[in-house]
Image (tube, rainbow, N blue to C red; front, side):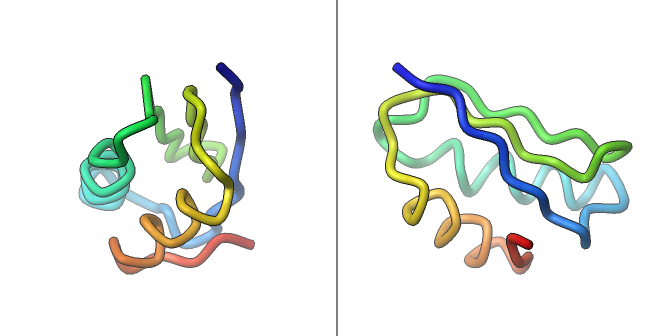
Length: 65
């Protein structure tokens, strides 16, 4: 299991946080997802490919920097 952190500059509120956590959390290999509004980061724990996480973040309406 690995930890990955993604920088998402558009994260600015709890709505953003909830949308990303919901979308990324649906990926089968994700054990945990934590969005920090203050740091504008998404931290993912699990055996998941980075491109899958990036696609899920994009599906939520946000872009990874």
